[in-house]
Amino acid sequence: KNEVEQSPQNLTAQEGEFITINCSYSVGISALHWLQQHPGGGIVSLFMLSSGKKKHGRLIATINIQEKHSSLHITASHPRDSAVYICAVASRIIQGAQKLVFGQGTRLTINP
Amino acid sequence: NAGVMQNPRHLVRRRGQEARLRCSPMKGHSHVYWYRQLPEEGLKFMVYLQKENIIDESGMPKERFSAEFPKEGPSILRIQQVVRGDSAAYFCASSHRDRFVIHNEQFFGPGTRLTVL
View 1 (cartoon, each protein chain N blue to C red):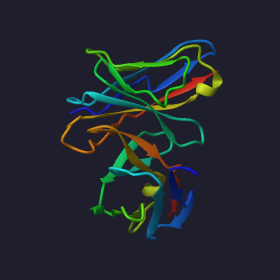
View 2: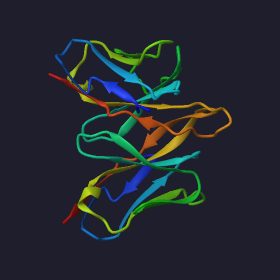
View 3: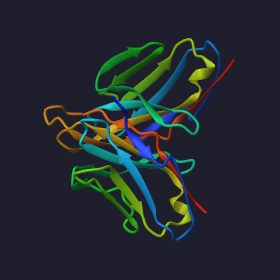
C-alpha cells in the first residue's frame, strides 16, 4: 500500500461543477502540499498546510491530522483547471528539512 | 526574483552516454532536492543536498547516479552510461533552511525531460 493515496485517479466534470480530490496518508507528517502539474509542464505549489483550512481564489484545501486525510476543492471549475493535482506529504530528514512523498496524482479534465 | 531554474529543459542521449542536469536554486536558498518522475508514475524523492554536502541520498539508484551542490554554481545531477529506463522528468526544488521552522516550503523548477534513445 502506498504511503499516500489519492482518489479519484481520474476525474472528468463539466465547467462550473464543484470538484473534490481526496488524499489519505499513513505516515506521520509535518506538512502536506497540494501541487498542480499541467501536461508537459512544471510543478506549481498550490498549498502547504499542517492544520485546518486554506483558501486561495477558487481553491480550498483542508486537512484533518487525526484522520490523516486532506481534500482539495475547486469551486466553479473552469477548463483551465484541467491538470494533474498531486498530494505530497513532508517526511522529516533533519530539523528544517523534509523530503516529499507523493501521491499518484489525480488527472482532472473540465469540459466546457 | 527568479525562481528555480533547470537546464536543459529537454535532453536527448543515446544509451551509454552521460547526462548532466543542472539546477540553480532560488536566490537565498541553500538547499536542493532532486525528484524523478518516470513515465506514468508518480514523483519520487532522489536526493537532498546542502552546499557541498549530500544529506540524504536514500532515493538515488545505487549505480550510475550521482549528485553534487558545489559552493559556487548550480547543483548537478549526473547519470553515467544512461539506459532507456532513465528516461523521465527530473525536477529539482529548493528551500531555505530555517532550523526554527518545522517545514520550509520547497519551490520547484520546470524540470528536465530526459529521453534516452
